[in-house]
Amino acid sequence: MKKISEYIFPILFLLVSGFTACKKDLGNYDYSTNPLPAIDTTGIGYVYTIERYDSLFIAPKVSYAGMDTTRLKYNWVIYKVITGSTSEVQTRKLIASQKELRVQIAEAVGNYKVELVVTDSVNKLVSNIRFDLTVASGIEYGWMVLHTFNGESDLDFVVSRAAMPVATQEKHLRNIYSQSTGKKLPGEGRFIAQSRRTTFSAPIQNWLTIGSPTQLSRIHGNDFSLMRENTSLFQRPGEVINPQAFLMSSTNSNEVLINNNKLYFSSSPDPLGALFPGALIGDYSLAPYIADASSSSIIAAVYDEKYQRFLHPVNGTASIATFREPANPAQPFNLNNVGKSMIGMDRGFQNQTLNFLKDPTGNGRWLYITNFNKTDDGLMAVSKIDMTSLPEIAAARYFQSSEFGYASFYATERSVYLYDYLGSNTASRVLNYSAQETITSMKIFKPRPTFNLTTTDGRFLYVATWDGTIGRLYEYSINPTSGQVTTTPTHTYTIQGKVVDMCPKARGAGII
Image (cartoon, rainbow, N blue to C red; front, side):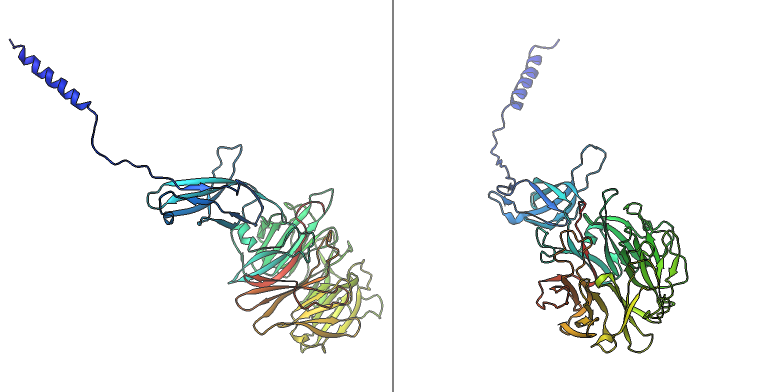
């Protein structure tokens, strides 16, 4: 039998052990709390609205009590506000990595969150703040500039209040094609042209068409978003993509395209259905020029280099046709037997078309004037003028004509000449550039439609140059009747590439 003491000692031991385990730890330890970076938005607000492609500027103050602020790293991200869906993935896009945000926003029209994330690079503590951003569609009047660099092309959008007085502010938005589509246009650009049709009975036709040797794109006039490209613009599969010229005809707003030296046209204004049927049937190979025509029986006129003659589509058919033979011997030339090569074409005074031609051999240069704005009566040849004696005409590369008087311009690599084709048949140099600058494009400001721009229509000349590194775009004021040029530019823009074509862009929204 065990003694009582054999039970007492183990119990006392357990009691003492339990008391010791519950005793408070009185050790001497150092406890501290690290501060977080503090973001102060006083005076700058939390809500922003900008037009697509405009720059967003946010400058918060960031402090870090008792800590070295050089340890802080800054990341700005943008993501779309998703409403009414829990399945859509919220993609966050890094747009800047500095404390102050100043960046061009190319996101599609909509509502977004812009978030600043501040991180201590040593202890990884993070602070963040969010801003509400609305990207609005506000692309109105402007001047489109297609430029090329390193075998790729892009678009700039320029707003000059001299040429577009209804604009609220001056603008120069760069590389908007690649910002919108995420890629540049492959190859050296060939043309940029607008389609803008106003109607109360059908959807507004409002887009831009861009072409390069291997790319045909349609982008929206409101925000430059991609609508269709390449084979999706054709009704038939397997079309060769080789666009060379484009025009929206004033006849029922037909879209006329030269692709791979053949003619296509579409009469539908619906942006999703305005597709090109197959090439018009016939034996021909077109020069890259299209003349507008107001007659529904003609639609547009083109020039066949293979047989050196004018042609036009036959409305309602898939055929291309010649014009009527001259109705009387007094006609200055036969549209079906011109015998020359085309080097330029533009619409001029009294809706006539000025066709600039050269002899197959030698230095002969000619101006053939036609009237395609009536039903074909065999009397469409207006006149022909020998330009061979004009200064530097054999080196002329670009041609433009006023629609308000008998004035025309031609440009060589270095000079622009004003040509009086109806009166004295002489030309005088009005602009000249240094040996470092080569002229690469020239256009008169001809907005279509002209709503709110009638006071500036035809009153500005744009000349683009290239020095091998930098492109320059000069805007000159001109007299629309006489063609006289104010030689001091109203604006000069720097372009990040060689300008290859230009066109006006009418307003983005609204009936007019």
